[in-house]
Image 1 (cartoon, helix red, strand yellow):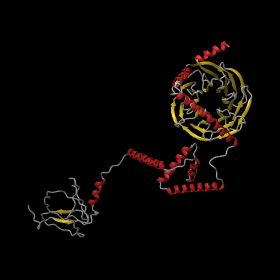
Image 2: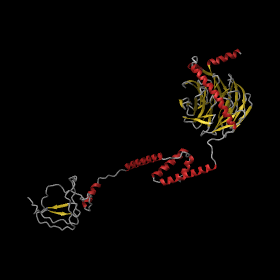
Image 3: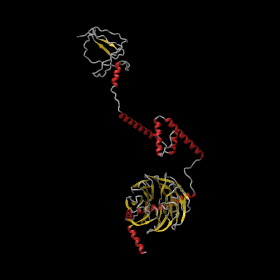
Length: 579
């Protein structure tokens, strides 16, 4: 049946909100309901809207408009389902309505949301916390934090934080300050942080001004007249010795008859043939030090009993005992120019002795127990190290303390003098070795590389190599010309107690260790040459005779062991028999 447009029974009802248009068709008369609001004209141009799924819920009846009275309804026209359109104003803004269709749309949109599980929520929280920690660490890394511990404490005090916690160390305190500053920065409390910083700067500047007004300190401190004279004497001595060393090195290099490799090979063969020649009980207590005399005819040892003893060579027969220390003796060494010897002790003193056992001098001044001692090559000065974090230089003739040298942050343990007499090397429990210029008093090198305390140091006679050994079980060879480490020798399985270069040419190096052995290393490429076993406890010290024929080691097993090349021992026995 065709329905004309003019006589069509279908009627369009305008909804006040303009949301939808409802069309009805009826064969009979239709009662029209007057609208309660003026009709809203729908814009003619409507942007395309994505098609609505086939299953569209029926539009709820609008309470304000009662349904029309419908008799026999016409069959619904085949066509598309009603499309819900959101009206668009002329200026492009979307209008909002209060119709039920709006609420139904919202219900459809929100109905697709899902609820996360508790485990997912915890994972998300952990991820967010990790991201916040990362950002916090980045902020902390970008902040400038004082390195001085007193400045760190002052900054913490100004920020209202505890200046220290129980068991907290310097680096931990500094890291805590860094995190506090980063937290303040992330929370936007920069004003508080900047105010604390300004107060700190103002206090420092005011203090500096007061100091400048009171006293202007020089960049050096005045030493005694004796120290000046000693520096001049050391400079004159070192110039002559250095010139002689360089001249000898040039002669060996330029003389075609000089074969350096052959000499080194011969010396290394001699070292490789070392055998145990003598073993003697040195004391009732563990031995702590040993030293050969200049001519090699006497051997000195010291022990934890505080007594030093002299022994004749090569039979290691006791000659005399040197008693005078009230605490354990820590080291003993002979003078390089005569037969006087010096001992160090835990009673904070060093003593100078004559070979007959008489006491010549006592050097007092250290505030803690002494460790190692060494004579200057000129024989006029004595260097001592101590657990008071200093090493000192003494005048042998007058017994005056010439120099009190600081520079190590922890106890100073080892000391050695350059063969020319111009330099001194010290090492300590701060895992650092320092080289000092005795002519100027300056620290010219800080040798960093060991990761644990350094206990032994020795200059090579060639003038440019320095050996150090420590608790990290390694021996390092340093080149003073290049100012860096050349070789790292994994020498022992326990700490290295002492290192010594062969005194004539430095053709080999001896290390003693707490692994109950001493080892000989090549001075050319620092490869192992010989291992000297035999001790039953820690080897505390070793020494090499001036002619390189003997090596002596002492240990906590209270024994003195003398090592010599096999042919040298036979020659000595033949000489003794002929006598």
